[in-house]
Image (tube, rainbow, N blue to C red; front, top):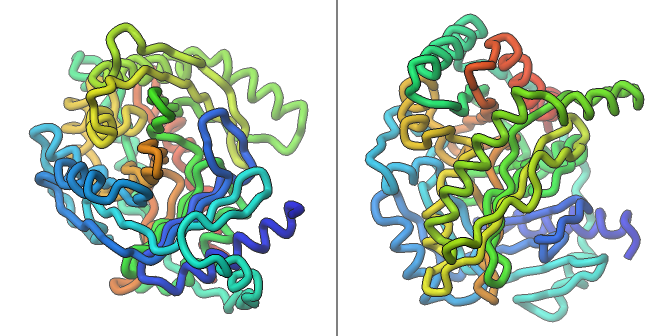
Length: 419
């Protein structure tokens, strides 16, 4: 299949999957990396489901994964931090996603190197999907997108966090703010297609869970397992793209040499290395790539890659638990950073800065970081997205605010012409 035929098939496959109560789609948008096993996955129809609040969720997932050895798709909310550490979440859960949800798919389709394959389900499934007529886009709707925190408050909060850094409480903290719309009626399938067109990223995805939706343009991998190896790829460091190729290259070079961004990145790399030691064969944790610069439609990003050899006696679920929530969305030291996040932010993170992904039939897994994502509760008609960045002592509140606006740009643009 050529690339246009593949795009058409992917759109039809998601339209077909969206008729089910539960479905999950991952699209690498033709980015290649040495750790991805598939270019596209779509799973639908929950044969078995696990839906839990924080408490013993990881333990229950381990039992569920053992009982259903094979493909599992699911999500992990940021609030699972509360069962890993002595932490709480006090802000209202407006989106109402579960803290942990996994399902065993009835149907599963994969694409790799242009080849489409039915991994689970009817042999004639590809013919059924290919025969579908794509539904024309519906008329745009108007959304009243509001900020949960005004700019003056945001600037003040950043300065408060810098005071904590000056006192030595923390070195770095990821501070986020929410944008939301009430009485929001959107077509999640169409919004995702538009977001993915505007901002194609390697860990983008669509997750539908009984009327709750994640429409994600995530550029970040949280953690994957490939055979005996665990790989984490934290992002810290962002620069806005320029339409002028010469200026764009200069911006990229400036990011590569920006002392503040390098410091942010290395702090989180150290945190990830520390998290991985809990799951590793001693002496095997290593930094595969430090300060790699990768280019996306809106931004350049600084991405590092950390890996280890997994302790062979460790269950894969425990490897996820040992590194959760991801260091790039918390800070260092991790627990104190999460306490300050709860004190300083105005909104519950919930599934934002959590992860969604899959376990495969070989016992491996791959999970993204839920950032650059539109979250929607169809029943409550509540729509939300959050953006944030790393605050260090070198941060200036105004520059951090501008970075938030940059990260929000694709989502705002998507929703302003929303269907």
